[in-house]
Amino acid sequence: MRSRRTAVVAALLLGSLALAGCNGADKSSSDSAKSKPQSASKGTNPLQNPDGTKPGLAPVTDDADRKAGRDLIAKVKTADPGPKTGYDRDQFGPAWTDNVDGIPMGHNSCSTRDDMLARDGRKVEHKDGSQCVVTGMTIWDPYTGKNVDWSKQQASKIQIDHVMPLSYDWQQGASQWDKLKRVQIANDPLNLIPADGSQNASKGDSGPASWLPANTEVHCSYAIRWAQVSLKYQLPVTPADKKTMLSLCGG
Image (cartoon, one colour):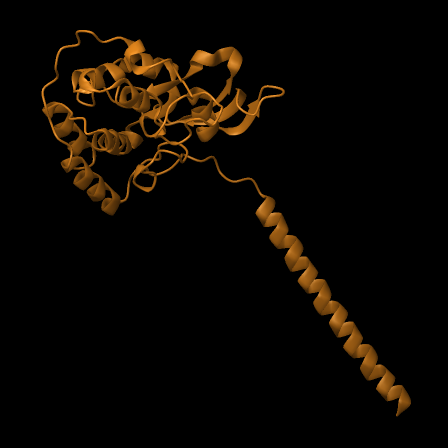
């Protein structure tokens, strides 16, 4: 009887050890899965990023989202552009100033440019001794649809695009604003996208009817972002631009 009891206890112990081993293997497998690198991000659907603080400008392909985009664009007012007379970049404050109230990331001790690179970049590297100055990163450029390895030595390779260009803003009503509001739109994350330098240069101060990113996948997203900026700052767009924006989301 004694030897039989001993055998039963031993069997129970072996069973417990086997279960523990299985549980340990599951945990290890789970940890391994968690540590696997994620696929390259294409950013955030603009409908899920109304303040512009989340990374990038992801393509909008879902039919429901495209309809939501058209509904948003439909709220945008239109007006013919006014004169460009008196426009100067300085009218919108110092370039990439952090000294601005009333927008996300203002007064965080980092320049707006560095904020945008850090927002959208992956594997971001900073200058020694700085938590702000971005010196290297990998970034998905929504305007070309390509991943770009960027370093500060090639600064112009990635530029910060004002989705609604400042000259366009000026002609659509910003010339009548006070200086604070102009500084806000120039540094608001909602109006800023890090993108290919040649794309940014070719855009100039064009609206969607005259210029669109080379990457057709983000055309609806781009139109939605225009609408978001327009509505936030109560700036009308030209009738031709609104028509184009609606068409980009299937309208």
